Length: 317
Image (cartoon, rainbow, N blue to C red):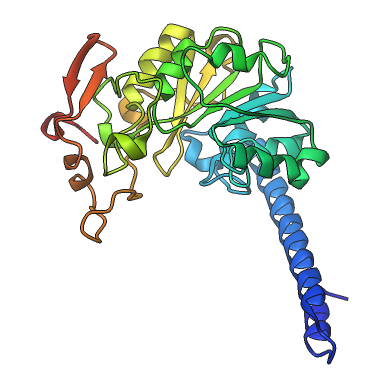
């Protein structure tokens, strides 16, 4: 009996109750989950057959990631074949939408997630993912001072397969501080509003909260140039961004293989189109967004000097 036939049968019953409806909900969720996983596997196999790509956008698909990152990660993992099938992700909220969940379910990796909310971690620990997969969890507010201690918690080998950083604030400073693991792949959120010609990050503040720092909530993180500057120092190659313009990808130099692109900052940069800021009930578009944070302080990692955001000098092309 198909799921649609089951729904029709339940809804036409005279004694239909909350429990029947709840059962229907579970069936629908399970069927949808199975369909998403199956489609992801098909797309992953098609992309794995590619000998090379000119941009990571060619291999995007979405199962649990917010954008097309599941596909990018699958492509990189298939090409690089990390020995240690372990992944770590920061800032996961309830982990229903994330960059590493698909790796656990589809590739049978082991994972470790950290989030600053006790409530989010409790949700994850009660979710199916916690018993169906090997997943370590930790509730902690991440700082440059505590990150290495936090990373030691699950006892993973230093060569972690993938690290995903998305904490909407000190992303640059956290990656810069990490020295106890050497991920093969690093995924880091970048702030596309800072353009492709700057090396800016928000100044380090161990208590950084983008909702408190500026009413626009778009003052956070680092430019793509700043992350690429740091990647070079740490021995990584910039390999591209997702098509949404919020995540940048890096591969350790000693693990690079043919078939993975290595664009310049300008070539790989993607300008984001999503609009987080709200002003007088409206969401600013394009360059008007960055004008909201004009004059806010930023640290230039190339010149090692503090400056301020000047929309007139930012390039997006």
